[in-house]
Length: 311
Image 1 (spheres, rainbow, N blue to C red):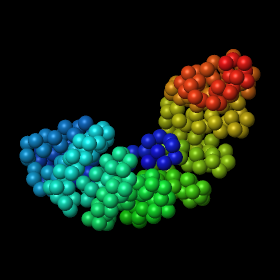
Image 2 (image 1 turned 90 degrees about the vertical axis):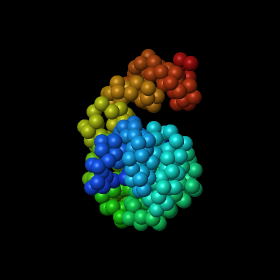
Image 3 (image 1 turned 180 degrees about the horizontal axis):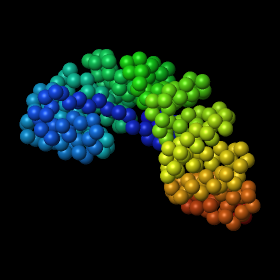
Image 4 (image 1 turned 120 degrees about the horizontal axis):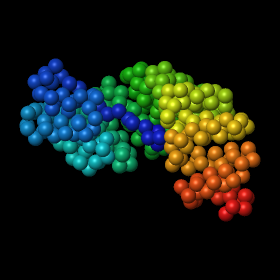
């Protein structure tokens, strides 16, 4: 859902057929097909074995199609995924998993009306399925229905108070509505539930946008502590340091950001600004040129080079 705020893609969890007590009777292929920790390629291969050998029938066979559809969706083979999920619905029209996962395919296809219709059916069949509420909230957001999205994330949290994804998604929507207090509250709950890199970056972004720069820097610092080789914490803290006039600190952070992600055009541009402020004109020109090489339409880099007489 990270696409909501133009950041890094956020993985939405899918419903998968939970192993039943009789799962062992299906053998290793069945266990890998329904296993919650199976990688997409492993799941597709295992579910294909279950389907091709006709070792399962009824809802278990529908589950194999549903889970293979999940794996194919993760691989962005959307038409193949849709075919599998159609078959799962055909085999068991009461299977909420299939409608939820089919909704995700339509969401990836940006057909949000059809996605919402699928989630509606999943919720009708299983009103306790928190994931379907969260997924429907994402589609409502993408249609511009912010209040409808919040209502769905409320529904997901009501059904699963430990659902970190729903708090994160609701936090994004509150941030979009400029409701800083509620956004911070949701991201803080998310940090308690899943204190990972993105959790701190997300809350740091809200602090940044509300001009609470010291708190933003502290959250980005936590992101760096958790994932020191990930460029995102460094480049976000670098920006705060430049805002605060700490040009040397900003330069050091952008050095790290570019060490771990040399393709980040904005880190090249912003490091150029830091070097310029520190009197390193030639270093700044080199960084602005690199930024412009990576993104020829970047106005800030072009304007900086023009002012420096280097374009």
